Image (cartoon, rainbow, N blue to C red; front, side):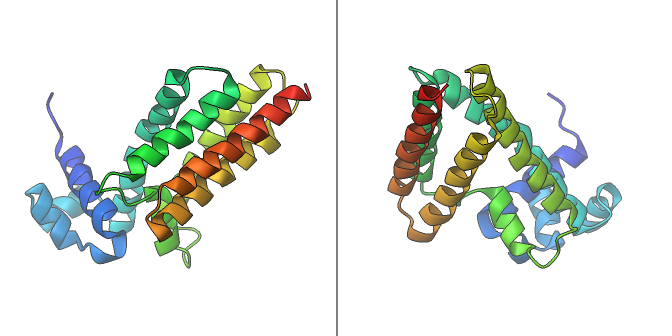
Length: 190
């Protein structure tokens, strides 16, 4: 596969931004990691802000696809499958290089810049997850799946935050049990 210059830059930036945080990574560091000059970086990205947005955009579909694989790959009904997402997240969080949700970490770093392009990418990613859950719940007969989808999204994002804070993936396991109970209750009232 022929990798473009832009893709190499985004790959290098992704490793650095996820590993160190966007505020701690200079464009010089990205250029060095990618094997290009800073001038080449600025040819492909007009600013660091654009590169940060590209970093998150590059995480969007792979992350959503991973959630879907975990959901499909878990045996049982919808409640079991939703819990399976959390169990797999907990397993991922046990890896020594795990640093939490790149979307949430980036948003926290840019909290004083609500119009930043990366925040827009992060918000869109979170909405896609929410809409995917809503579609699943409504296909299972829940008349309005949005409140339940939002509850699941809150449990996921909350478990990311608390797991990162305490370095304890069991919070994701606990959130998965709460998600299981919420989905089970919603389905039993259909």
